[in-house]
Amino acid sequence: MENPEVNMNIRIKKAAGFTLVEVMVVVTLVGMLAGISVPSVMKARDTASLNVIRANLRTIQDVKQQWALDTRAANSAVPTEADLQGYLRTNQMPKPLVGEVYSLNAVGEEATAVIPVPVGGLPAGSIVTY
Image (tube, rainbow, N blue to C red; front, side, top):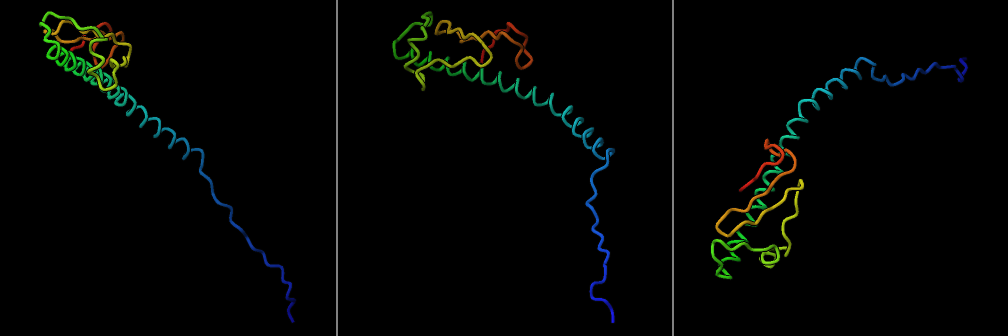
């Protein structure tokens, strides 16, 4: 008769890990993809910032025109921020995005913004209009 307590060799295969070469290839590919995509993301961010500044200028210009119609102001009249605040949705002038300075100018002229840093391909100190 055979012994029921036969010593059976059960081999459990350990899970294989990644080799150093495989890890280095993956890290290299991720680095290459990041190098390709980061400049595009930065350019898109700059373009979006410039678009926000232009949208703020458009809002200021529209509010300025509404103020001029309501007060029957001449084209040479220059409104103050306090004059325009009641016409804005939040009762506040648009907040600067990159430190730009908004100039209201006269009713007959477009509002402008001076940007202190390069944005959207424009150099620092540029005057932006919508």
